Structure formats: structure tokens, C-alpha cells
Image 1 (cartoon, rainbow, N blue to C red):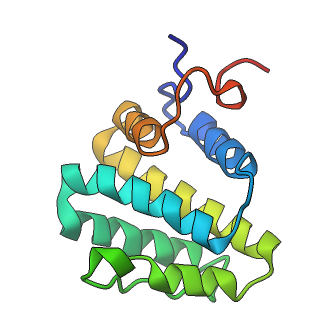
Image 2: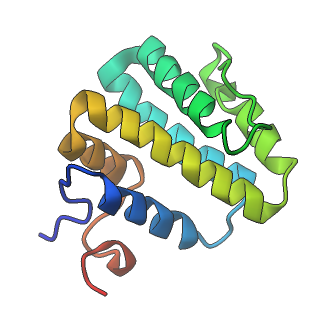
Length: 144
């Protein structure tokens, strides 16, 4: 089995794979981006808990606001069904190219923080599981 998100200490391959995954989505919209976050949250909350996830997300938003100051999603609602309502609203208010880049940066910042806490290998494994990525997804393998 080809490891599509192999362990790298600098995270550059993970960043590239996140960008590729986002680029390969057939209908990128704020709603699609929120679904990615919901899938990832379900996996990560099982490891670090709701409070841990909220802290990681808030820090990621803070870091991403340096590039995209309009991101204002650092307060996650307690209801899991509306966890990313502010994120979706923020993304919908921007041109699609800007919202895609902001979401990508937010995901990269989030996974960088997560990798620093739980390691690159487990972070990549969580992404694969959350986004149902497997070796048959040619665009996400090591093949070019």
C-alpha cells in the first residue's frame, strides 16, 4: 500500500496533499469546505476532545487572520451541528478564490499545530481517515 501522506518532519508533503485534495474537489464552495472540517473534527475530537479541538481551531484561526483578517470564527458554537456556521458564513462572503485560499491556509495551520502535538504520522493518518483518502486516489498518491 502506498502511503499517500507519508511522514515528513517539515510537513511540506502534507501541505501539498491538502492543496491537491482541495483542488480536486468537484464543487468547491463554503459548504464543501465546511464538510471537510466536520469530517476532520469528528476524527480529532475522538483523540483530543471537544475542548482540545476548539483550542486548536481557535489558534489556527488566529494564525490565519494575519493573512485573512476577515476570518472571525474563533468562537465555535457548542452545538456540533453548527460548529462551523461562522466559518461557512465568512467563506461565503468572499470571492471563491479568496475563500479557497483562506480555507487551505486554515487547514494547513490546523494540521501543523496538530502535527506538533501528536506527530506527523498520526496527523496524516487522521486526515486520510477523515477524508476517506486511500491509495486508489491517484491524485493523492506519490505518483505523478
